[in-house]
Image (cartoon, rainbow, N blue to C red; front, side):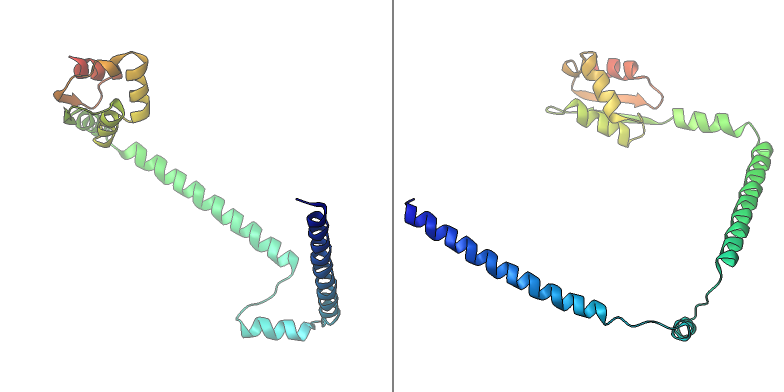
Length: 173
Protein backbone atom coordinates (compact mmCIF):
# COMPACT_ATOMS: atom_id res chain seq x y z
CA UNK A 1 0.00 0.00 0.00
CA UNK A 2 1.34 3.42 -0.84
CA UNK A 3 1.90 6.41 1.39
CA UNK A 4 -1.22 8.08 -0.01
CA UNK A 5 -3.32 5.01 0.75
CA UNK A 6 -2.19 4.99 4.39
CA UNK A 7 -2.96 8.68 4.70
CA UNK A 8 -6.46 8.19 3.29
CA UNK A 9 -7.06 5.29 5.67
CA UNK A 10 -5.90 7.37 8.66
CA UNK A 11 -8.16 10.27 7.61
CA UNK A 12 -11.12 7.91 7.39
CA UNK A 13 -10.40 6.59 10.89
CA UNK A 14 -10.26 10.14 12.26
CA UNK A 15 -13.59 11.07 10.63
CA UNK A 16 -15.29 7.89 11.88
CA UNK A 17 -14.00 8.42 15.42
CA UNK A 18 -15.16 12.01 15.38
CA UNK A 19 -18.67 11.05 14.28
CA UNK A 20 -18.92 8.38 16.99
CA UNK A 21 -17.61 10.76 19.65
CA UNK A 22 -20.09 13.47 18.75
CA UNK A 23 -22.95 10.97 18.81
CA UNK A 24 -21.84 9.64 22.20
CA UNK A 25 -21.61 13.05 23.81
CA UNK A 26 -25.00 14.19 22.53
CA UNK A 27 -26.74 11.00 23.68
CA UNK A 28 -25.16 11.29 27.16
CA UNK A 29 -26.64 14.74 27.56
CA UNK A 30 -30.11 13.45 26.76
CA UNK A 31 -29.76 10.66 29.36
CA UNK A 32 -28.54 13.11 31.97
CA UNK A 33 -31.52 15.34 31.28
CA UNK A 34 -33.89 12.39 31.66
CA UNK A 35 -32.31 11.44 35.00
CA UNK A 36 -32.76 14.98 36.30
CA UNK A 37 -36.50 14.83 35.62
CA UNK A 38 -37.11 11.97 38.09
CA UNK A 39 -40.03 12.56 40.40
CA UNK A 40 -40.37 11.73 44.07
CA UNK A 41 -42.88 8.99 44.93
CA UNK A 42 -45.04 9.72 47.92
CA UNK A 43 -46.15 7.28 50.61
CA UNK A 44 -49.79 7.59 49.53
CA UNK A 45 -48.86 6.56 45.96
CA UNK A 46 -47.02 3.52 47.30
CA UNK A 47 -49.97 2.53 49.50
CA UNK A 48 -52.45 2.91 46.64
CA UNK A 49 -50.20 0.80 44.38
CA UNK A 50 -49.97 -1.97 47.00
CA UNK A 51 -53.73 -1.89 47.61
CA UNK A 52 -54.50 -2.04 43.88
CA UNK A 53 -52.24 -5.10 43.48
CA UNK A 54 -53.50 -6.93 46.58
CA UNK A 55 -50.30 -6.54 48.57
CA UNK A 56 -49.43 -5.14 51.99
CA UNK A 57 -46.34 -3.62 53.53
CA UNK A 58 -44.90 -4.75 56.85
CA UNK A 59 -42.09 -3.50 59.05
CA UNK A 60 -38.70 -5.16 59.20
CA UNK A 61 -39.42 -6.45 62.71
CA UNK A 62 -42.67 -8.10 61.58
CA UNK A 63 -40.85 -9.65 58.62
CA UNK A 64 -38.13 -11.11 60.84
CA UNK A 65 -40.77 -12.54 63.20
CA UNK A 66 -42.51 -14.23 60.25
CA UNK A 67 -39.23 -15.74 59.06
CA UNK A 68 -38.44 -17.05 62.53
CA UNK A 69 -41.87 -18.65 62.90
CA UNK A 70 -41.57 -20.18 59.42
CA UNK A 71 -38.16 -21.67 60.28
CA UNK A 72 -39.56 -23.12 63.48
CA UNK A 73 -42.48 -24.67 61.60
CA UNK A 74 -40.14 -26.20 59.00
CA UNK A 75 -37.91 -27.67 61.70
CA UNK A 76 -40.92 -29.08 63.53
CA UNK A 77 -42.31 -30.70 60.36
CA UNK A 78 -38.89 -32.17 59.56
CA UNK A 79 -38.70 -33.63 63.06
CA UNK A 80 -42.21 -35.08 62.70
CA UNK A 81 -41.31 -36.67 59.35
CA UNK A 82 -38.15 -38.13 60.81
CA UNK A 83 -40.09 -39.64 63.69
CA UNK A 84 -42.63 -41.14 61.26
CA UNK A 85 -39.86 -42.63 59.11
CA UNK A 86 -38.27 -44.19 62.18
CA UNK A 87 -41.62 -45.66 63.22
CA UNK A 88 -42.22 -47.06 59.73
CA UNK A 89 -38.74 -48.64 59.62
CA UNK A 90 -39.38 -50.34 62.95
CA UNK A 91 -42.73 -51.71 61.74
CA UNK A 92 -41.34 -53.25 58.51
CA UNK A 93 -40.83 -56.98 58.73
CA UNK A 94 -37.28 -58.05 57.98
CA UNK A 95 -38.39 -60.83 55.63
CA UNK A 96 -39.13 -58.36 52.81
CA UNK A 97 -35.50 -57.32 52.37
CA UNK A 98 -34.13 -60.76 51.40
CA UNK A 99 -37.05 -61.21 48.99
CA UNK A 100 -36.09 -57.98 47.24
CA UNK A 101 -32.47 -59.09 47.06
CA UNK A 102 -33.52 -62.40 45.51
CA UNK A 103 -35.61 -60.55 42.91
CA UNK A 104 -32.64 -58.34 42.02
CA UNK A 105 -30.31 -61.33 41.73
CA UNK A 106 -32.85 -63.20 39.64
CA UNK A 107 -32.57 -60.66 36.79
CA UNK A 108 -31.05 -62.42 33.79
CA UNK A 109 -30.40 -61.15 30.29
CA UNK A 110 -29.47 -62.83 27.03
CA UNK A 111 -26.70 -60.68 25.60
CA UNK A 112 -26.21 -61.03 21.86
CA UNK A 113 -22.73 -59.97 20.72
CA UNK A 114 -22.52 -59.54 16.98
CA UNK A 115 -19.64 -58.70 14.64
CA UNK A 116 -18.46 -55.11 14.84
CA UNK A 117 -19.78 -54.42 18.35
CA UNK A 118 -17.48 -52.48 20.64
CA UNK A 119 -17.01 -53.12 24.34
CA UNK A 120 -18.63 -49.74 24.95
CA UNK A 121 -21.81 -50.90 23.18
CA UNK A 122 -21.80 -54.15 25.15
CA UNK A 123 -21.33 -52.25 28.43
CA UNK A 124 -24.18 -49.87 27.58
CA UNK A 125 -26.51 -52.80 26.80
CA UNK A 126 -25.66 -54.42 30.14
CA UNK A 127 -26.31 -51.17 32.00
CA UNK A 128 -29.60 -50.53 30.20
CA UNK A 129 -30.84 -54.00 31.15
CA UNK A 130 -29.90 -53.66 34.82
CA UNK A 131 -27.02 -56.14 34.87
CA UNK A 132 -24.35 -53.58 35.81
CA UNK A 133 -24.65 -50.15 37.37
CA UNK A 134 -21.90 -48.29 35.48
CA UNK A 135 -21.11 -49.06 31.84
CA UNK A 136 -18.04 -46.81 31.78
CA UNK A 137 -16.46 -48.65 34.72
CA UNK A 138 -17.08 -52.05 33.13
CA UNK A 139 -15.71 -50.88 29.77
CA UNK A 140 -12.56 -49.59 31.49
CA UNK A 141 -12.23 -52.92 33.34
CA UNK A 142 -12.36 -54.83 30.05
CA UNK A 143 -9.75 -52.58 28.44
CA UNK A 144 -7.43 -52.47 31.47
CA UNK A 145 -7.38 -56.25 31.78
CA UNK A 146 -7.10 -57.00 28.06
CA UNK A 147 -10.54 -58.58 27.70
CA UNK A 148 -11.60 -56.08 25.05
CA UNK A 149 -9.61 -58.00 22.43
CA UNK A 150 -10.92 -61.42 23.48
CA UNK A 151 -14.71 -60.85 23.38
CA UNK A 152 -16.41 -63.66 21.46
CA UNK A 153 -19.44 -63.48 19.15
CA UNK A 154 -22.62 -65.20 20.24
CA UNK A 155 -25.42 -65.13 22.80
CA UNK A 156 -24.53 -65.13 26.49
CA UNK A 157 -26.69 -65.55 29.60
CA UNK A 158 -25.70 -62.96 32.21
CA UNK A 159 -27.21 -62.26 35.63
CA UNK A 160 -27.42 -59.22 37.83
CA UNK A 161 -24.92 -59.40 40.65
CA UNK A 162 -22.15 -60.98 38.59
CA UNK A 163 -18.76 -59.36 39.17
CA UNK A 164 -16.92 -57.65 36.34
CA UNK A 165 -14.48 -60.56 36.33
CA UNK A 166 -17.31 -63.11 35.95
CA UNK A 167 -18.94 -61.09 33.15
CA UNK A 168 -15.61 -60.77 31.34
CA UNK A 169 -15.03 -64.53 31.58
CA UNK A 170 -18.50 -65.26 30.16
CA UNK A 171 -17.94 -62.87 27.25
CA UNK A 172 -14.50 -64.28 26.39
CA UNK A 173 -15.24 -68.03 26.47
